[in-house]
Image (cartoon, rainbow, N blue to C red; front, side, top):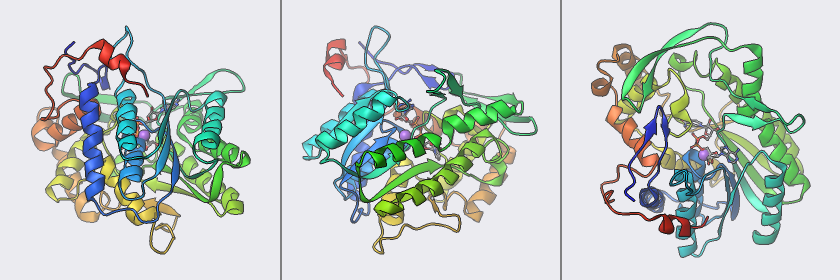
Length: 400
Ligand code: NAI
Ligand code: NA
């Protein structure tokens, strides 16, 4: 069959396997030529390994200087009568192929990271295939739901402001339109549930469980990803439900950090740059900011994608010659340092004030945003022949 991009709203309903391989390969090539990671971890567990920041972290660790063996957990779909499967499914497969070609172990576990079954499977796999311990755990899950294991019900996140309603423009990728959205403030329940889904509770549970199982090596580090952003996005992000969840994540980092003292471990939060990922395109009212930010940072030669951020995290912030992570006064690692530069934000604010549904393609970096979104799903690579026939048998022969 010929595989074309299918987009519904802001969700990709198809993915190109060969294009996903190309996306993985390009990220590998970047890491091999970038400043290398010194004294990185030997073995890492990545929760949320198949796309966005988690995948970039995995690629950076394996190919960016430290030759890390990785265990990746993700929730992805393979090919079936419903479709070709998800991009993350193929990213896992091709990452593993490339790692193994380089003589490095890579194991993929597909399933629900919130489930007790997956936790047991991870512990068993570390014991059986990673000499019993890991040196780093990346927590990079992005999900809209989390099961409440006590009740069997689900918490759902709601991306909303707190206190006052806000109006904002949201990019619809399917129709290539910037449309006016109005967001009512979250209820207390919605705030609570979003913290449950995107806060730090599950991270803390994971680390406690792994520590109790004895599978964390002495000096083990763990890191989760956060976002703060500039004042212009505070109403929808930092002071909204997501911001509350991130605040909880930051607090849990301190708690986990304390708990890991017995093994001389460390827990950190890396505050990242705003980027186009499967998860971020869902944030209503956020797209004009991304369109302006990309335009400005590219013009200034400061733009980074997930892979550049991951490599910079490991080569200059987490693994340093002094052995100490580079943190701010709140113990946060700042990868949003370039995004938040005064000159960048001044230009972004000016540009955003002028972006309208009529001119966003010209004024903002619409092409860059769209290209990133397509590439997340294996589309838009010049080197790939998208007219080629891809058989179901071929796709089914690929195993994670
Ligand atoms: P993503 O959607 O690209 O990746 C999410 C990963 O989580 C995927 O590997 C997915 O398979 C996995 N996952 C989701 N639910 C799962 C489940 N139940 N069980 C197992 N795996 C599951 O998202 P992205 O953007 O990379 O987000 C990762 C983290 O980075 C999040 O905490 C996000 O808030 C943070 N971040 C993202 C920024 C952005 O602009 N995209 C900026 C700063 C932080
Ligand atoms: Na991720």
